[in-house]
Length: 117
Length: 117
Ligand SMILES: [Ca+2]
Ligand SMILES: [Ca+2]
Image (cartoon, rainbow over all chains, first blue to last red; front, top):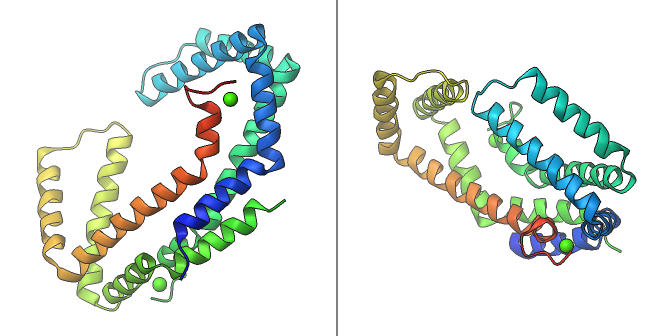
């Protein structure tokens, strides 16, 4: 019998060698090596995180805050490398979600509505 | 180059053939084939879910509700098969968490604090 942990390690290696991950890492490094881009992105993420925390804690988010975040989003979207990075991040996030769905399929089957007991 | 999706499918198969999953499925089936146990567990989960939803929506949970849930938890814990099932569920949940940590390690590295850019 195999070992799920070994397979998980193999999967991590495949992920690391995948085209998607390579692209993501390259863009990540490109932004990190560009001081202006890095500050722009860090700032954007900081604001996003603060808004998320407020939302989770049920705090009110003002119209002003929403508009400011929206403007900042438009700004980073206009930055070529940052917008590519965010696109690749979304692609990676989708991929990890799909992989996760495949892996937990046996559990879904066990607990699913169409189970046969 | 390999394919993360193929590896994820292999991992799902390993998981399905693992001792942990086999135990979980057997206990799951044992409970499902015992009408009294099944009703007891379904009822317990229903109450748990309702309390969780209340909590997430920031609603107040009364002292009475907490005590009632606590009593119900003690009751299902005393049921031999249900308590074993819940134990195996916790083990499986931990295992899936560990597998997930292994798989997303490349991303942790990329975004980690000790990254080298
Ligand atoms: Ca079943
Ligand atoms: Ca890095």
